[in-house]
Length: 286
View: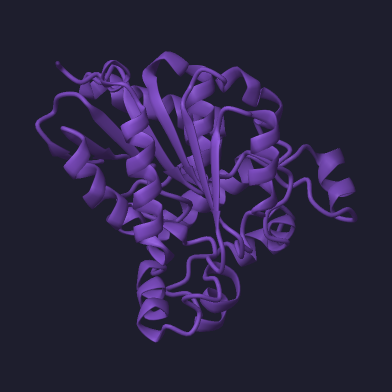
């Protein structure tokens, strides 16, 4: 975990995605530091430093409890929670388990809202095949970044693609933690066999879409790129239907790395959202 600021309210807790660290949300962290007295980036075990997560500790509910434990340790009663991808899914689970501690929820292309993930996720859950695919690798390929992570707006930006490749360099502990999260949150055996022959369903074991109405009193902002090939942007429409009070915004030509692909757009919407929150909600001292 990394913290900036005075240690007092208002607080923001930032949760990066799978196999990612604070670099993947650097523009948002810089902006939040100008808006909040304290900003905390919580890296899951293994993502920034070893040891890696064990499968027995990697269910979404357990990861949400981990965030709560960190908040307890820091003396944070209430905070703005910002999560990208996996971090967004963990943020959703945390908000459902401890809504009184969430001043506002900012979800950037989050997991846990819908049914489908990238098709290769099905193979991650197959014994031996998944183990082979989730082996630690030194770097991501340029083709993978362009085809799956980045939208058309930045796909031909060589410097940006190089940046994504550098961010994708994986230590063993990070890869092992990613594998643990995938395996701990897969559907049961019957559903897994059924889903191998049907589209979608990969998020059924950890989706909270049916519980979104419970967050009606939690101010929520959802941001998504229309060309996200990791988590379908159609989940944003699902969110709008099941959580009518959520503010849902889509940006064209942007992929899964929304926080870095469209930092100005993302920051502008987060800043507007924060201005809509009351000082009392954020824990500001008058």
